[in-house]
Length: 277
Length: 277
Image 1: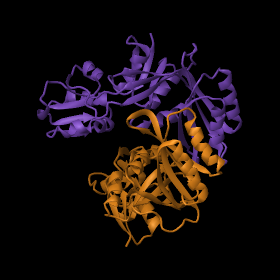
Image 2: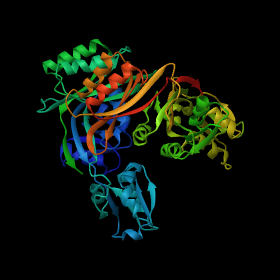
Image 3: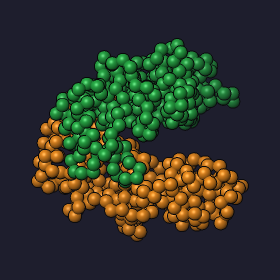
Image 4: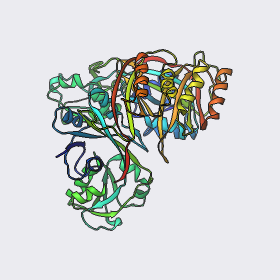
């Protein structure tokens, strides 16, 4: 049976992403931090890790970008999850009865319009959305609620007082599946991610991108992260269409390596499909 | 007298940056959030705002990038501040006596090697470094300390138990000064920042960068931020050498605007000097 690690409590959006990726019939391993997820994969405790790499409202998740460079694991899958937030509680409270609403600060921000109408409730930031469901469940002193996934409501046997309360319905998180071994089967719609450090000369990034443009390889994303011991110099991460074993990609990557100080293949994988949480 | 707003408590690194930028003899306005700083500038409460845009270890400050786009203010100055962390307390405690160490999670992370040696102390995360100095000052139940700037020690009359305790000495934060009015005098070493949204066609970013490369304008940084209602599409921010009123830059920017959906000048300013905190 497939075993997959994710960061957060049971019911977290990362758990939903794990099950959309590998099916309901998997064993999941909730983890304290993103680095714990990488370590569990590295140390063969699990087959796969599921990590968020980017949210369509908030942008890139810096920590997972840095961990992709630090650990020599492979990106083997991708998935976009539409993030739907729900107000959940242990009893069918009226909204006006609720004294506290718990959730992760990002989720609270994403539901700010709904929360403005809950005038009697104090908003309390927590470590994660699924964890906030647990906190609300254990609050026996006053009526409280949490903002979390429908799956968290199901796991902790809580009632959905109000579904889909986020301000913006166009809220997607992009996840990667990571593994110690590369993808064995060739993806139908391949996408490849690499990272590289360029020589510090004017026009270096332009030259790097021109390699891909001239080969008509479609660049899908570029991200930069600082290099710790070289202030204000950057590692670039790019995603593009194509597989690393395509002749045209192989040639472009070889060319890029000639103008780079270092380069690393992060993986070739099937371009992600979108799912609803 | 010049009045400048910054985010944080008195003694924050942003206050030090304000004084390095405009001199010791200014009035400062500590502010709750980055958006408060932008609002104080917009509403003529202060002449300037000082905002961190990037740290050499942690990368870009997303929130200030997004606020630069949201508010039509001008970047009028730049400065790099070397971040030095210090263990400070109200009495000259021995390190082994200290029961709690307070600071912002980033500062705690940047001093992790030093903190490992403080085996008797519990590490407590706080909202900001200067605020942690205040919390330690008000803890009368046990010996405690904070990790903050030398300036915070001075302001709150605390003792520096151990200076410069960060793991990595190469730790710089880059700050911008923002104002309602543009720079009046021409910078000696001009730098310009713009942001733009490209048409969603293959090779669009390559085309944009080629305009600058062909004009021999040196690109210093590129950053991307998500567009809220267009999942996985991006606004690009670029910094380059030269002034917006240079003919060569004017021409490149006009050319860029022809392949962009929208474009915004953020400012031309003197390239930042480095200071020690």
